[in-house]
Length: 204
Image (cartoon, rainbow, N blue to C red):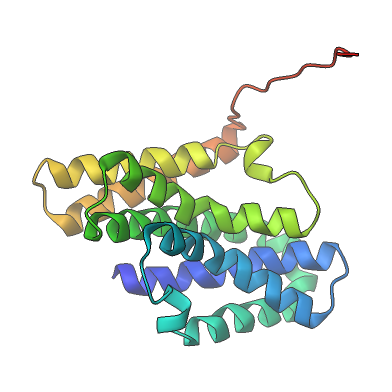
C-alpha cells in the first residue's frame, strides 16, 4: 500500500510544483523539470547523503514520466485550480507524510542512528519543496511560515517509536500517516505557524 501511496504522492507534489511554475510563466519543459525536482528531490538528497544507490528514480525511471505527466495534466486543469485548492492541499499533505515514512524506512534499512532516521524522513518530505522554491528564487516556504517540517518530523517520530515499540509495521504506518495528515490539515485550517525571528536593527 505504501508503494501505491508513494506514486500518488509523487503525482501530488508534481502538480503543486506545476502550479508554482505556472505562476512564474515557465515553459512546458520548465514545468516538467520543476515538477520532477519537487517530487523526487527529497528522496534524491536522502539517497546521496545515506549512500543509498542507485537513486530511486534511476532504479525506477518511470516515476519521471509520472511526475512529468502529472505536471502536464495540471496545465490542462489550470482553469479549474481555484475549485481544486483544497484537494491539492490534501494531496500535498498526503505526499508529505508518505515521503516521510519512506525516508525513515530507507534510513533504517541502512542501519542509521535514530536521529538520522528522523532527519532522513524529514529530508525526504520537505527538501523537494525547498529545491522548488530555490529554483524559483524564493525563500523556501517551509522556512517562512507554515507548519510543514514540524509535521514531517513529528510523523517520523511517531513512526519510528511505534516500530521500536514492537507494533505491527502496517499498523504503525497507517497510524503515523493518519497522525501526520491530520496534523498538517489542522495547521492549514487554524493557521498554525512556527514563531518567527524578526531582527531589523542595523548592525553597522
